[in-house]
Length: 91
Image (tube, rainbow, N blue to C red; front, side):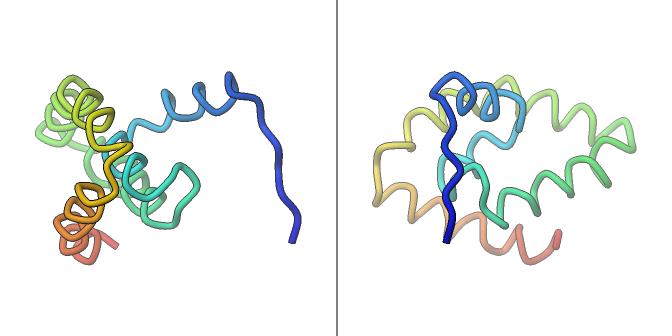
């Protein structure tokens, strides 16, 4: 199995551009779960005015939440449990 090495700066840029802050903090930036949420955002939420407002609000509120849970394994696990039903609905 090969590994792709990236610099810290590349990793930080990737996190900033993904937009799925909480899912990224819980699952990791390259996880299938994060991709499911990105696809939902791009294919459903951003196609209507309510969805765009939701995404804009999420982008304002979620970074500090993601930073808070990122290094707390128990909390990350609890948030993953909360995200699971949403993931199942949107995939």
